[in-house]
Amino acid sequence: MKHIDEYRRPDSIKGLVAKINEISTKPATIMEVCGTHTVSISKNGLRQLLPRTISLISGPGCPVCVTGGSDIDTAIAYAQQKDVILATFGDMMKVPGSYQSLGDAKASGADVQVVYSTLDALDLAVKNPDKKVIFYGVGFETTAPTVALSILEAKRRGLKNYFVYSVHKVVPPAVAALISLGELKLDGFLCPGHVSAIIGSRPYEFIARDHGIPCVIAGFEPADILMAIYLIVKQVEESSPKVEIAYGRGVKEEGSQRALEVMDKVFETAPGDWRGIGVIDGTALAIRGEYGDFDITKVMSVEVPEAREIKGCECGEILRGVKLPFECKLFGKACTPRNPVGPCMVSSEGSCAAYYRYEGMGILNDG
Amino acid sequence: MCLAVPGKITQIKELDIAEVEVNGVKMEIGLHLIGGAKAGDYVLVHAGYAISIVDEESAKETQEFLKEIEELEASLKLAFSDETHR
Image 1: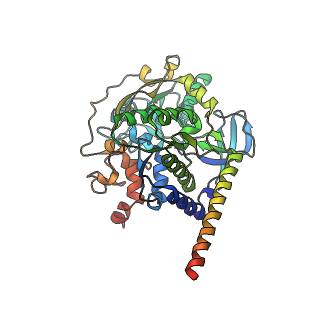
Image 2: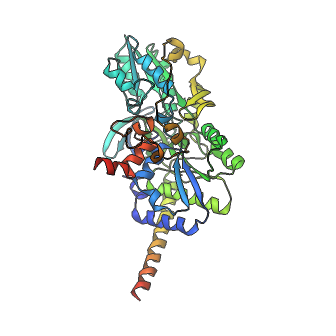
Image 3: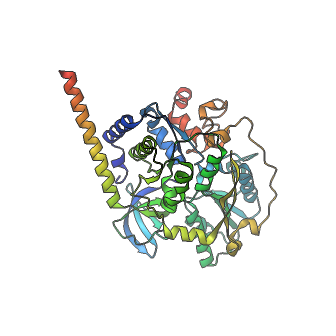
């Protein structure tokens, strides 16, 4: 496939690894912020190809994983209301809330439907005029504009039965919060490619400028990621932190003006609840008052049971990069992709699932 | 979740709706989030919408960089195998 296969050639990968080996002298810990990067790194065995000087750790970049337990409990409470269809991306179905998942709620009779796009959710609203269709909006800046569009479209079409429960989150301030926690010494950020397709490269500038940490925006194929790691290592060696784009075919410095306008029209920032980090100001996208008719939190109130932590689960530490999946006592024992306990094992883009499938444990346990 | 795949626009169907081909599969997507896409362009498709037009010029530059690296690697390998044969 064009624009994919060219970035998977073994010779490019060998060449890039050789280049990294050639220049790397200082130890460097690089965090990949995006879950899609985590999967690609594990799947392609990139960690094992890199010199010992470089460690890669996963950050809070899987939207499914960082969604707070109480947000899931609330979505379930909405799904259980009479005459409601809760539409969601498939990724959210199995994620555990405090007591159950959306999948469990569906099995007990709630009408939960998986959609591929908000366009499908709008169709559901048109086809079911007697029901309230609530779209469960989860995701970062990549996804939020498509949800904002659905609200504008529902307004244009005069749909009275389409609503959104938005728990969308934004990435750069969460990275700032992670840095200020000071739990880790990070030498570089591998910045998310498709979040950056929307927001551009400028929102990361403070990280390089104020914190002296290199930031490189990367694509998702193995050569894309290695190219970005090479640029980060070069910045580390030269002590010249800056923001670079190693994914120029998808990302422009200024991002996408149209998408940013749509997002800004419908959403405003609010405090966001991140699993493992807690509430961070300015990291959630709430629906503006002007579009309150489509905001289910303004239209319908539900009783949500008190949230509780999942016992023994260390997803929080893993999402902050403080622990590796292997270091959680449940990993590969009580918690596997077949019987997941925490969200990092449920989501295909969670770091536990990626480590389990591609970095040893799965081979040991599944034969 | 932020997965997006490159698809080729085969047809602009109406304002802001296009047919794209992704790995041999044709589907309709929204162009509302990008401007100026035309048939033949590659776009990155996420959750039913194009989120950016693939910049062919930049893709070409990256490919040239990778080709240079491959050649460098090949010449090093050759030098190495010369030495081991000696």
